[in-house]
Each structure stands twice: as C-alpha cells, then as structure tokens.
Image (cartoon, rainbow, N blue to C red; front, side):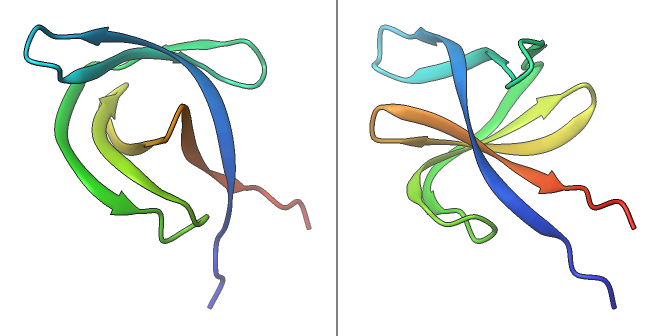
Length: 87
C-alpha cells in the first residue's frame, strides 16, 4: 500500500467579509504565483488538518470542479498539498 504524504502550504487569499461577519475566500495564489479561483464555499467549520497538522477554521471549497480543504489558522491561510515523489 502506497501512503500519500502532504505538506502545509501557506497561501495568499483574496476574501470577502460579508456584513454578517462571515469571511469567504474567493481565490488564492499558489507558491509559483498562479492564481486559483474558488468556485464555491460548501462548508465552514472549526477543525484540525489531519494530513499536515494545525487547527483553525476549515473551509470546504470547490476549485476547478474538485472538492478541497483550505484552513484559516489565526491570521494565515494554508492548504494541504500532496508531496509528489519521483521514483
């Protein structure tokens, strides 16, 4: 069985603060400078990242038709990135 490894990647996030105080991410910038649009926020809940550690607010989002998690950990945002190993 081949276990996947992940790392924590902090990203710049463009977000909207709604009048009710809800913070909604709209896009983020990856390490290489590429910008990704968040199509939809599906769920927001306090949670821990089981893959890379850390605790904060977990945003379940749709990006390019795929469901992903983003985390707001105090003042910073991160995503779980799979480590690709070449063998």
